[in-house]
Length: 411
Ligand code: ASP
Ligand code: MG
Image 1 (cartoon, rainbow, N blue to C red):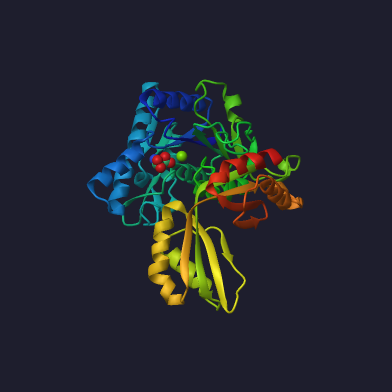
Image 2 (cartoon, helix red, strand yellow):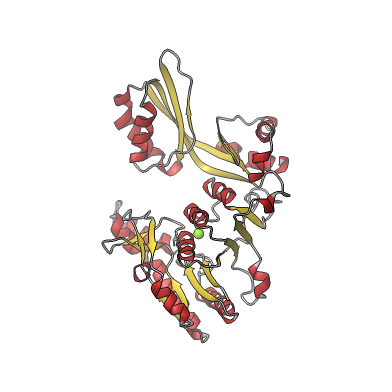
């Protein structure tokens, strides 16, 4: 008997029929003697529907009220799933984040989990109940409902699993695992049986949107074995088969030694590049530029500072497309005159492509093979960044798919 956390995404919870399927699957696991906690998302489309309602009321909804609103999607889900379980004779109880409580900071719409009280959940589990907890939401220390950012239910599930020291966190979703790259771009992409947490972190942060990145960080920090698997299979399929399906995020590098050097090709279409030109090259400049951007809560990814010429240098970095205008405004209004930069330019249509793999650590020549492959396709590289287990390049958005296909073939 093990304590297992199941997470079901919006598609899996998308209709009464599908919710009944989830109940059937959960009941199967419970019948096998496991203690089961379920963390579902809102029904598919529901969070978008709620957020667009807010937008119809006002262009700038108050973040606290936005969370109050968005969190209702998950509250509906947990109640419906509890009813579906009751209907097939299972004892089950649903809780909102504040009832557990899942405590977060007060950063509305992108709150971070601080702690989870496991007392009530354990009591219910010990009494033989299935416990269903809302994904995506928590409560701050003033009692305000918070949400964890889009896709946050993954993070809720892994955090709950970590708090309960579960044996595994199983993330049921509409894909059947993690692939070497996006199968929509490369038709012969393969499903990975295992991926290390570090690789998954790179894949998730590089835009493979299978899991919310913070959930992978949680899995890594708490060494929580986390499996991504399909919810579209027969809910009554043999449990032993289901238990080893999908992709397991593991912590064992040695199990991967036999495998290829490169685990996957990740990409992110929605990048933009900003260059601050003619900056006086003196201490504190990088801090003044990037500090202002960070203060505006904008995430910066790749950074390059050019060699200085006559005491002036250029500074280039990337930000997500959604934050481009905000970043440009911050730089033009708060930074440009202050640091005496000549001008600020940007390109809102660039993409990032990366090769990822822990096997890279022990191999040389991966970078040159990557650059040769791109050169053969006539693709110009605008920026390069590397870590121990990945190499990323920034390229014109129109060559992204070509680059991914060529690299997938080459590696
Ligand atoms: N319902 C939320 C969203 O759509 C959270 C989630 O599904 O993970 O972003
Ligand atoms: Mg999701």
